[in-house]
Image 1 (cartoon, one colour):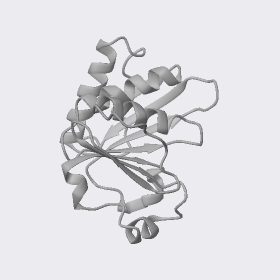
Image 2 (cartoon, one colour):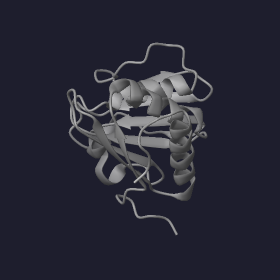
Image 3 (cartoon, rainbow, N blue to C red):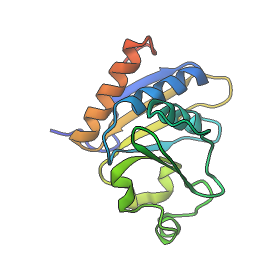
Length: 171
């Protein structure tokens, strides 16, 4: 039986930005087309660092930056990456009016920064990555999969990260 959305499937401590990038790369190494990863956290928490790592794991060659002003950037890789940043939006209506979520994303991987701005319009099938902390402190992450397919993604990514020496493990 699936764990309800919002219940952490994993708790991780990520000590620095380099390790956050490596965790993102582990997620980028194992997704399937249509996977969605929603990122939550304050300014400076490491959402974009995670997204850059995910892009590296997908084999994206372009420089990935926060798409705050354009809202969504697309990058070619092993799977196409759709990098969405909702920081400048007030709510889901603005995201939907801007066409930020559409059927093209079924052929790639979508990472959404500031996903809380979507409210109930967030994709039902997803991994939620909640990042606590900012500045020079370690980050405390709570990760939850909303369905069995995304639980597979979560488990495989964390297993890969840990196999490569990442973090103190799962909670």
